[in-house]
Amino acid sequence: MSAIKIFGLHAAQAVLEYSPERIVRVWVDVQRRDQRLNGIIEAMAALHIQPQMTDRKTLQRLAAGQNHQGIVIEAQMPQVLNEQALKKAVGAMRQTALFLILDHVQDPHNLGACLRTADATGVDGLIIPKDQAVGITPVVCKVASGAAESVPVYQVTNLARTLRWLKEQNIWVVGSAGEADQTLYQVDMNVPLALVVGAEGKGMRRLIREHCDLLVRLPMQGQVQSLNLSVAAGVLLYEAVRQRL
Image 1: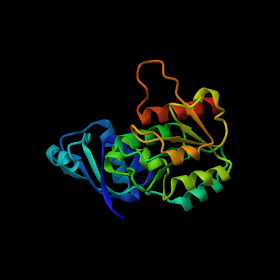
Image 2 (image 1 turned 45 degrees about the vertical axis):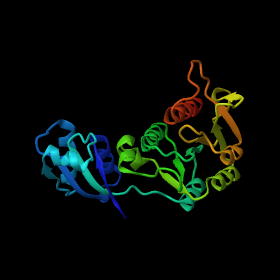
Image 3 (image 1 turned 90 degrees about the vertical axis):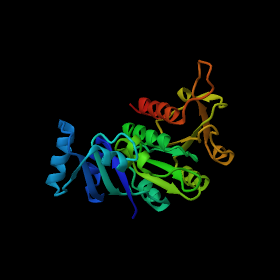
């Protein structure tokens, strides 16, 4: 399994909490000492993980110029699950399902932001296609602030086929589209649900749109015609949470 560099306090805390067995090496800023970083170092010591003290310039190089907050971890990639794992998870589900599906999203910042919101809203899993879409990368892990560790990510070979299967499991597939007749506030989301958001600038592909049970739009009051996809995903997910509460 390939390794990645994880950097920043949130991401370091998450990998330590959810999957410390993935940690290969750790570098820490020899000049930085604050309460949060010390807490992470102490937790590592309890697991017999010994960080290597180094200078800020080395950390900057290891983190490829990103904001590392004094710590860089080399770790095995977060586990990405397949269709069989998705089917197993759905079959074992006892709560009302809530999935987020991203159709050909290619910006790692958007994927990371969606993962972070998915974690905050209790999403059961994030589903992405294998081809022509970003997967789990160091930038995704950084932006996700630990959510790449806590939210199951399912990569599927054929997204349209996966949508058909979800519908067969009585999970409603609801797509976000600007031309939809209904707004998200007019739809009952207190049902087993998979929310679909399309790619940057393009929206959902025609085939994916045709596999949705219904389409919803976000009401736009200003001059812009659309929102950033991670923002739109957040609005959709929190409306589902609001209705379920």
